[in-house]
Length: 429
Ligand code: URA
Image (cartoon, rainbow, N blue to C red; front, side):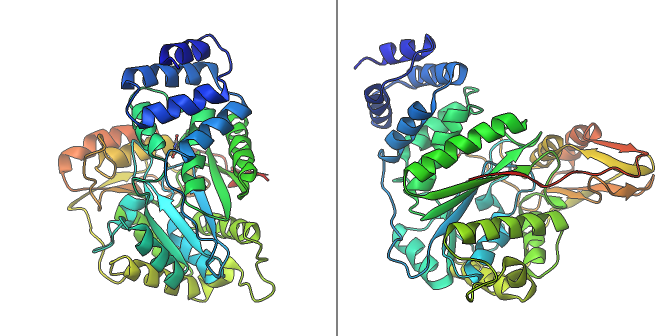
C-alpha cells in the first residue's frame, strides 16, 4: 500500500477503507511512515472527518497495535472513568477510592497535563513518594488489594496512540472528534475495564466548546465502547468555569482530601457522586441496595478516605505527609462589589500553567505547589477590595503574566438572580 494514496483519499474527502486504516496504523507504529506524512494524514482527517465506521476501525487498529490487560478474573466487577480534560478537574482522586469503597474495582490509567489542562498523574506525584510507573503485575496487585489503582499506561498499551497523540499535539490536530474518540477509546479498551463512564467536558476549558460537538464525541465513544463489549455511558458536564476552588497539583490533592473527608466544594462533591453512581450502575451494582453503599455515604462515613490512604500507600506515597507549597504568593483583589457572573475556565487554566503548574514541553517538570486558589465561584457575591484569587508560584517573575491571563477571566455584575446552571448537562447511554 502507498501512504501518499491514503493521504490523497482523505484529502479528497473520501472514506478510508478498513485495509487502508489497518495498514497505515501498523506501518506508523513500526516507524515505516514518516512523521510528516502522518501529520498530513492527521490534518486531512481533521479537515474532512471520519464516519463512525472509520473511527471504529481506526480505534481497533490502534488497540491492536499493543497489549490488552485483562482483569476479568478479579472477584469484583471493574469500572473506570475517563474525563476529556478540564481545569481544576481533580475528580479521579476522590472518585477512584469512593467507587472502590462501594464495591467495584477501578483500574485507572491516567495521563499528565499538557497545555492549560491538568493531568491526574502530575497531581498525585505531588504526594511525597507516590509512584505512577507500575508494571502490569504491580498494577494488578494494588487493584486486588485496595480496589483501585491509578497509574501511567505502560509503553505496551496502544503504542500507536502514544506516537500519534504527540504528533497531533504539535500539528494543530488535537480537536478532531474521530481522532479524540479513537485516542481515548483505544487506551481505555486496552486497559481491560469491564465498564466505562466518560466525562465529556463542555465549555471554554474543554476541547469541545459547545454541546453539539460534545454530544457527537460522546456518542462516537459510547458506540465504540459498547461495540467492544465494554458497557459505556457518558455524562456531559460543564467546563465553562473551573471545578472546585483550586487549580494546580498539590492544591488540588488537598482539595480532593477535603472531599474524601466529607467536606470540600459542592461542585466537586456533586460530580464525584454523580460519576460514582454511574460507574457502579455500569458495573452492575445498584448504589444504596444489596449491600452496595451509596457514594455519598462512602464520602461521609470515612470509608472512601480509608481506601484513598491504602491506595496512596500501596504506590509508595505517604498520605499523611505535608504537601509541597509554593515559595511565593500574590493576592488579586476584586475591583468591584456584586455577583461573580463569569469565571472562564480556560483563562484560569492558562494562569495556573503560567505559574508553573503545567508544562510547556513534554520533558518539562511541573511545580507541585504552583497554581491558583479561587476565593469566589460563579454565583458568589464578592466585595470590592476582598481577595478574588491567590496565585502560588516558586518564582515571583511568573505572577505578572498569570495575572494578565486572569484580568479578562471574570465579570462582576449586579444580577442577584444569577444562576450558574447545572453541572451535569446530559447523559448519553
Ligand atoms: N485525551 C486523549 O487521550 N486523547 C485525545 O486525543 C484528547 C484527549
